[in-house]
Image 1: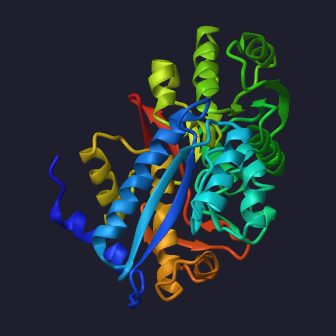
Image 2 (image 1 turned 90 degrees about the vertical axis):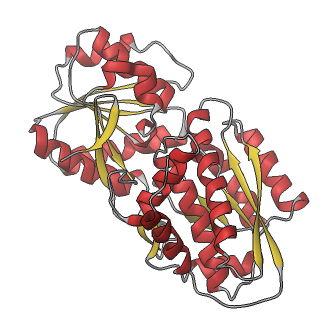
Length: 373
């Protein structure tokens, strides 16, 4: 695929938006902990692709004069224990200046305290649990929008489109991410005055959801909200349709992966999900990012875009700190990141150290995510 020059120019312009100062040559090590194996591997593969591209783009741009970013990538294996071990190596052995990841909020709640204790800045690029991430401490920052930032607006858009009168919820009750998603879904429905006719739960290792779906179907809700990781999400959607239940379904952030459609097939048609990344955006930076990913043979998703943005944020922090790549330099630089051009849109940090940019709502059409109009 030939990438239009105007898109490459746009990407270069985004990198050039990073302030320019000169300093002595320096290599800044960035650790990335992603779920390359385990239950969240579908997300980790996309994050890996995004981070690798971003590191190359920043280094090739020459904007960080005298500074070269070096990526150290490890598998957190969708495991608290492995996440902790990876963070320990990053902090104590590799002496990284910043860490991106881990993939899941559950792993982050276990590993991020080590980074806080070791005064090593962390950029969360997919941890969307509304509580417990940036609360860990002032070295923990977040690019990914929380479920609390996305779900209420997504629910409002869906109700405006469908006009449903009540709803039911199905969620994983043994995972920080899926439990946090449920909390936001429940609160959002209550705030919107939408009655909840039933709530069912499952464990992250479950693969048969027929009992829960049958119980929910018996209550005849107009709308179903589901907080699940993509492996379970695809099975839930498929099994609901196999039961002949065609209720409209809206997922949490765990649904935001092409693997939903790959695994669920036609059953995924019409499924909606709030998203932190508007793939249909015609912003030149976003178009350049997508084109570069496709040239690498990858169809990027939200997790890829967020991981790519995480590197841009670190690069901007280094520049804001006067081309200094120490741990405290980067932490101080984060506070100055404002309206940074990224595939997610103009990015800034809130005082809470959470990310701030526009959200959108996607719907599956023809086996692909499209922005809900």
